[in-house]
Every structure is written in C-alpha cells, then in structure tokens.
Length: 250
Image (cartoon, one colour):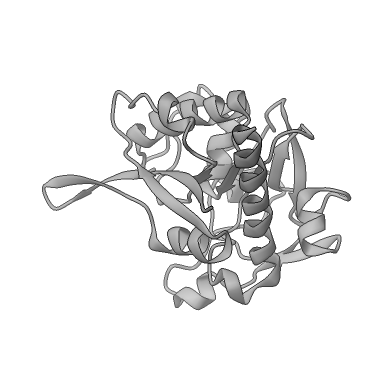
C-alpha cells in the first residue's frame, strides 16, 4: 500500500490572482525516491483545520521556497528590506509541525522546511547567515545554470549514530547550498544531525527514538536518484512512513 504524504503549499501571486503551489522537483522526489503519493495542502489565512487530515496521512513533507519566515515568529528583529514573506504558509506550517510532532507523524523538511521546524518548536534563525559572525556565504549564484546552483558545494559533518550518518554510511557527506537564512538557536526538542565546515547547523532531528523528524538545510530532492546519499534520505522517510501506517492499523 502506498504512503500518503502531505505537502503544505506556497501561496504565490501569478498575474492578478493567488495560487497554491509546490515545486515539481519535491513531488517527483517523493514519488520516485520515497514511493509516496504527495497531497498538496493549501495555505490559507486563517489556516485550514488540518487536524482531521493528519489522521489519514502517513507523513508530512516541508519544501523549500523563495520566501522566508517572518521574523516576528522567532525574534523581535525587523525584517530587512526586500525580504520575501509568505504569511499564509507561515500560519499553516508552523501550526502543522507542532500538530505532527504531537501525533508522532513522520516529517521530512528541506531548506525553508528546516527553518519552519526549528521555529515551530521554539528555535530562532539568522536572517542573513553571510552577515552573522564566522559563517560563509551559503547562497547560490542565481546567474549560474541550475545544475551548478544545485551542484555539490561543501561537506557536512554528520553526527555519529544519527539518521544521516546511517544514510551516508559515513561521517561526512557533500551537499548543495542555496540558502540565505539558517538556524541560530536550535529548538529545545531538536538535536543537531549535521554541521557545515563553518559551524552552521545544516540538519536537525527530533530528540526521540520513537518518531522520525528530519530537517536538512540543503536540497536532497534535486536529481535525487543520481545521488545515493540523497536517495537514502528519502528512503529513510519512506520506511518511517510505512512503519507509522502499519502501527496505525494495529
């Protein structure tokens, strides 16, 4: 039986109208690497009540996005000029992450998704990593071709015994890098799964042996089947969803 995975949407204006959408690369990765059926979840304000739907889902996937979480959710800082926001997505994802954790629903989160998980559970962010102390510039060059933007950019050190170390079967792995924001303070219920060479947190998981929640700052969905490490991340998510579904049925 195929697993059903919820994917909260971005709310974006196209022409004169708003649309709810998710990038095809994420949906294809879920289908091809996790053998899951992705179900799009509209992000409205006020947010829809997704609690009944969570009973039917086997997992939750949080995508990356061009928008950033509004900083009032994690600090008293003002947002910088030109910072793109999606308050409807914030309202949906920040509440649904907490609901997923409460229910034990498996979660995999990518880029903005990692930041949503961290903020939803009480952590904070750097609005501009490249201006925050010792960190490198983790942003992509948008003038480059996509294969260059999403190409392997730097190694990450993987926490021994963690989900990612098992997926890589190693203590380091190469990842891409396409983000301007990043984790400042890790949420109390999360533990670090990976760090960049400059010390920036690149992945976290829930501090629990009973629930799968993994969030990564890079984009493992990109050509997922061509990268064994990326593939194994999605397969670990698939295994967690299957176990969760089977447990629900008992």
